[in-house]
Length: 202
Image (cartoon, rainbow, N blue to C red; front, side):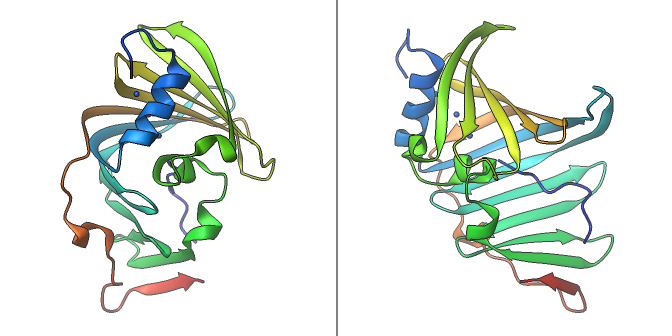
């Protein structure tokens, strides 16, 4: 299986003086869809940069999302509500897994899952840093694959997220041009393997 980068994806804003946890809850209760540009940087356990990619993302809750990676390589991840598809054009390979196995208590569940995030995550306000208000999210399920995630807000807008996995690796995603509740094309969340592609997985 190609594992250049499957976004363990992947998040979060409501009152003028609300803390980050309130903003996070407000975001989930008031956001049915989302669209943004992103830059994703991965650091190893020695804080050395091992990946730097850019692209665009869309989500339609619950369970539907699309991450298009376009620089320095092309890769596509689509959640159609039942399955998650990872397509690597360079390898002409598709990896598919059931959505419930990919989501669970993962960052993808946080972003595209239920609005009642406190059922599966513990939330904590961790204050201001670098002009952003930060909320810390930790999974109640210790088998989730990540240790904690930090979500940074500028005003009522999600600006950044920082994922710390169980292997000491950190993934930082910076969002720009973020839109809440845009009208999205349903076709964006459908995927059919290209003819001749090698399909692996469940």
